[in-house]
Image (tube, rainbow, N blue to C red; front, side, top):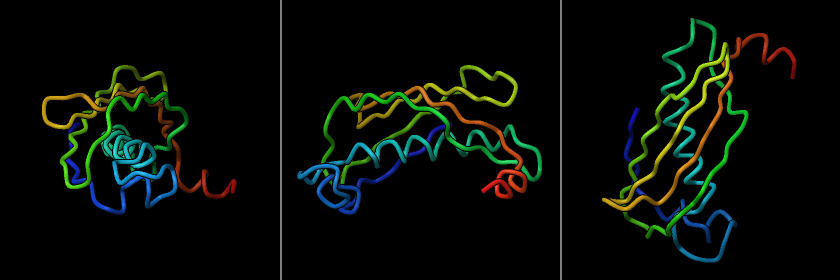
Length: 116
């Protein structure tokens, strides 16, 4: 699954507190990546199910200016019962700016929320 995001001022490291520069923050890059994996993960769910993130290993390779487009590609590389593992790449134009391995668990929403 693929999706493109526009880096807005509120996505800046200086705005969310993860740094002092007006560039795409690492937490926002991760959120973009998780969003694409979550949307792809829904295709593996039955009614009443969803996915939750359980693990991530992220490399933020290059800074991205506010106003730029970031293209995210998430590919399911393994499904082990209810655990989905994704290889995720982030690009600004032709340049890779990030990569991650991300795991999501398929959960029953009602049961999951009842445990909180």
